[in-house]
Amino acid sequence: MNWDAVFKSTLMLFAIVNPVGSIPIFLQLTDFMSLKERKRTFRVGIFSSTAILFFFIIVGDRILTHFFQIQLSDLMAAGGLLLLIIAIDHLLFGSLVRGVLGGEQYNDPSHIGAVPIACPILAGPGAMMTVLVTFSEHGFAVAASSIIVVLGIAWVILHFIDKIYTFMGKIVCIVLSKILCLFIAAIGIRLLMIGISQYFK
Picture 1 (cartoon, rainbow, N blue to C red):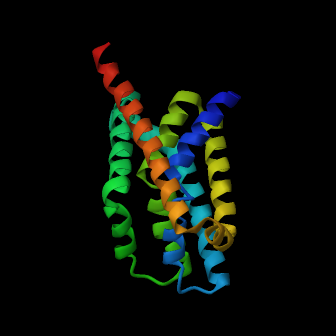
Picture 2 (picture 1 turned 180 degrees about the vertical axis):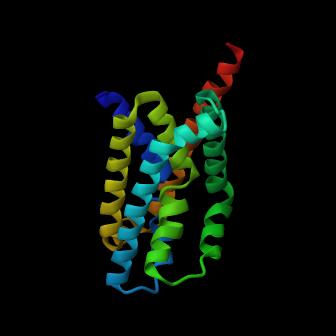
């Protein structure tokens, strides 16, 4: 296995999933729950997001390539543009996050764990596109390893979320989230440029 590719892919996916920056969102979504319900919600969120990302790397490439005739260069350009939009929105506007919070009308822990915690927060379009590009470039083992590591870290963060939030505070979480967004924007630009460059070869 290419461990250098695993390390880089893990860092890229971690920046896009952004579990640290989403701590205030997770707490807001589960504020009314008991400790037992909150743990159940987070457990559902981690398992659901893992299933979504694995399903996407196994089936997504076949669907896009065979049914929609989309090539890797198209995917990289579209994914780069999407990541850039997500980063700009989070840095400047935050409308996507407000839409997630404002649109949630259910109080069931399992439902909140699946939607919106699993999708679109943990396993959103940016994460799906990232693991699919990783799978196309480096293969299943690298993509799967990055998913397991990142969502494993996310599980640890969610398991100790109250202690982490108390220790770090809201301001530190927000600052880290903004820094990760800069990385996401840079990744998006790189993917967009690589995808576009394929059309001029």
